[in-house]
Length: 121
Length: 107
Picture 1: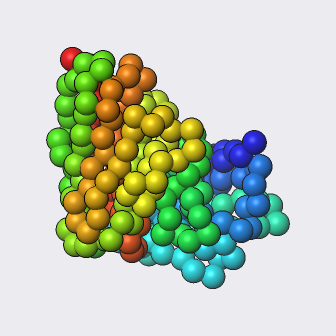
Picture 2: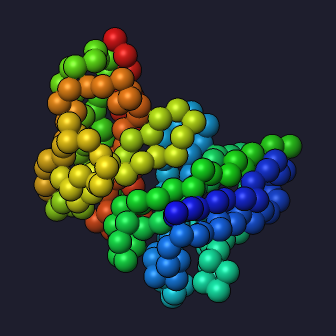
Picture 3: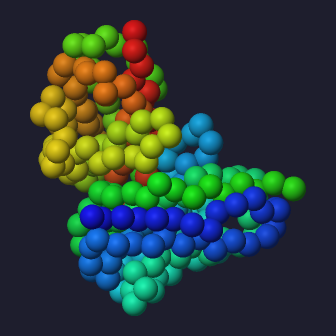
């Protein structure tokens, strides 16, 4: 059974850092591009970043470029998102999601339950 | 960046109604358009990919159409479990972008 389980969220002060993890199981993690998508409280969905199956290609939303870093460890079936210089605008539920195909432009066919990041002093 | 505009932002409908949600892209995206359903407190669920391909397990009352810049998702006979928020998303290029969502509420 395919599962994506995010962790690492919490309350953090502005300007601080946090690392999110997404543990994958039930599929060949190393074959798929993986995404991070976030949703601010009561708001819509915002794509954050994508990493190709082997980590060679990475793209970010302009809103996080230079502050967030996505990575993966295929030996551990785990996806990561390093968040630095956090601001209140980064407060959101962060989802990891699998690309629906081997193409990272395909939709997101499986989602985790999300991990909540709250940036507050 | 490609902007995705959904309309309406919300609608009220009754069980059994036919409902259509529209999504417009700021430039042509061919059929690289996906639709998601999100229920309160839940993760989004992929309903339709590449504009019209129904995902496995999605009821046939859902259908998608369109190409270029204009797309629709239609629910032919709204069921109680369909009350949710629906998002379109373009997969034509990065940054990937979503529409603002359409909340389907019970009349």
